[in-house]
Length: 131
Length: 131
DNA sequence: TATTGTTATACTCTATAACTATA
DNA sequence: TATAGTTATAGAGTATAACAATA
Image (cartoon, rainbow over all chains, first blue to last red):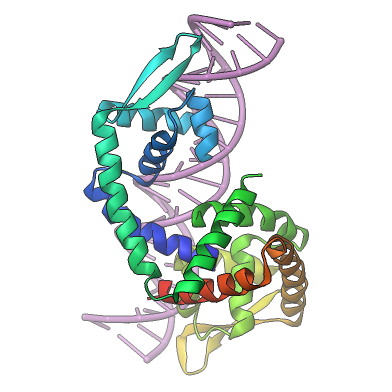
């Protein structure tokens, strides 16, 4: 059931994100950066569970699109700090609005109590999945 | 959250299935056949949402392993009926026992009411995802 | 002409290994 | 020596196109 719902969610999300010029992983990375700027690209890759070598080309694209910046960490010049730009923040929040709307519609069919329990349980399982 | 939980589930399931000599898609196909024997390979592919061309090589493997049989449909000789063998049923139910055990452990942390609501909501969402 | 099963091919996604620059 | 970032390459997974048999 989880796999089936996830696939349906991805199918529903992709055209929405494409309308904002984003890929699925691009959106995930921007979302993560929206929560906290990345101390390093490696940390960012681990936070979103994405391969660090693929993250690089993704960051190349997002940087080229002006959605984020990369600058050497003054404390460790091997590492690079990644920050959202103003444009990146606006694209992210605009995409998030549409994604949230889609999610709301999906959950509309569920009774209120069941819906709250679902979200609570999902959060706990997702947190458990991190370990 | 759905994607993260799904990935964690797959990670947890793979070693279990491997112990029974099954792949993830092999288990999915056997499970589907356990619910209802397939009227055709195409119908089976659509039921589990798997590419029909990939299903063929998967069925080749499962048939070669003695877990299922393929025979021409007398009513439409283009199509082939797919049935679980006795061995296939035993392997399926043995694997399912272990998978269910893992799932139970995962849900153990949730309060009873939340857990029931989760399963009910998942079933409804998964059903909705079919359309 | 359309459909089932099949094969071969091309393509995308993902993981591995090797290199550089810093520490 | 170990780590962050990078690149190139190999591999797995997936989708596309074409074909034979049957409807």
